[in-house]
Length: 153
Image: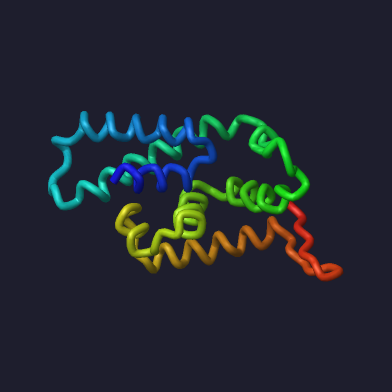
């Protein structure tokens, strides 16, 4: 389960130290609140929900840091398209951002996300559609001279 917790945290946060902090806080909160868990069979889902909330808290705190701080030192020119996409995803509202990161970046199936976030798959599909529309507006992707031109709006 440790690897799965790390994978979940890594899909939501960009920094290993932040991931470790989120996991540690989530485990502490789970330990303190274990008596609130009604069904032992739901421990995994409950634990992931706690971790997602911790990641969201850390993300909100770190959001105030300049986005340029997250660019790699080497190969900045080649990293810009990925950075643009990451920046556009980071600008989505909370439920959409988390959903996009879990589904597309962490390759988590919608059924598992629905269980973890406690919403129906239909709701998630609707949110994914809305997120893709918002990303399409923010990222102008057009083919020019055989390549792809990314423009962040």
